[in-house]
Length: 293
Image 1 (cartoon, rainbow, N blue to C red):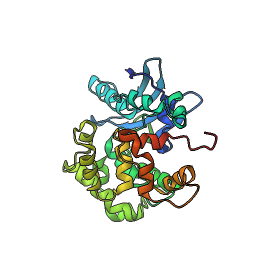
Image 2: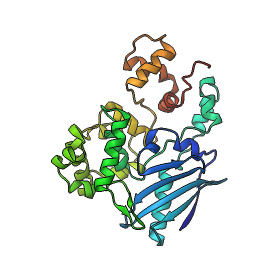
Image 3: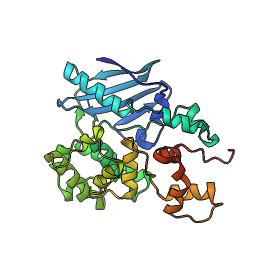
């Protein structure tokens, strides 16, 4: 199956792919030499499909393995469009960035859209796995979850999608601690999977939500295992840029850029970007922190 998806210009697949570390986490993979983004997806129909996404003049071309019918085609179009933030109009950000030399690179490279997973569930769970660990730990935990609970591609059983809420809901806390080695995150992951699987928590509704950013943040913070940093990160993925995901890296880089290396706190980081309003999260994310201006 081949699908063409038009995306509002300007658009750069390479910039979306490299917008943050998600591309380093399975089931994503990126072949920079050919410019092909691969992703393995468990579709709502039950099929597991592999996408090969490449740039075109008007958007992207998606070559699909493992899906055939019209219902699956429609679902894939929606999911790939979501993954690439195709629905977002970035003109306001580019207009703002055009007047700031430290954001010139963002305009030139058409940065701004942030790579997402096909489901909000996957993004929430992966975000949980980024907290209180090194990036290598996040990669390990994601790999282990996919190896243990991922749905395999029919054409290649070694290639698996990210686990569905149902698969994880049928595991146990002990199993997630011992086999998946999730540590203290195990009960949070299990509760997330079970509340989503039961329908108590409808994460996918956040793709179309009309909630204010503050209301959405409050709901995200109500998820066990999601704190202020994780909520801000998820808001960015959901296209809300009012909050900055402040971690140790943010404190260090803001200190070097604006405070001559002196120790700073979260309030000072917020104050630096406050003037950028609703775009402050993107300004923080795509600011050129190099010393050459």
